[in-house]
Image (cartoon, rainbow, N blue to C red; front, side, top):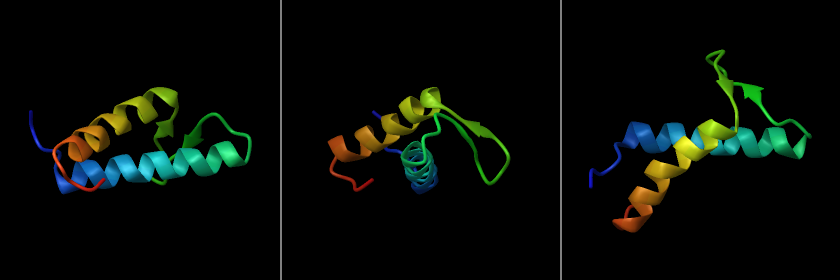
Length: 60
């Protein structure tokens, strides 16, 4: 099992936080500051490195 990089964890946290904020406003997707679309599939992808980091004792 590979340890997620700091960059991967930062991206994942950013995606999860951005989507949570969008959902509080009633949105199901949003455009990231880079202009890329974030949707449910991105949340699933973002959770993988966070779960991996947590399972090996890292902090997400």
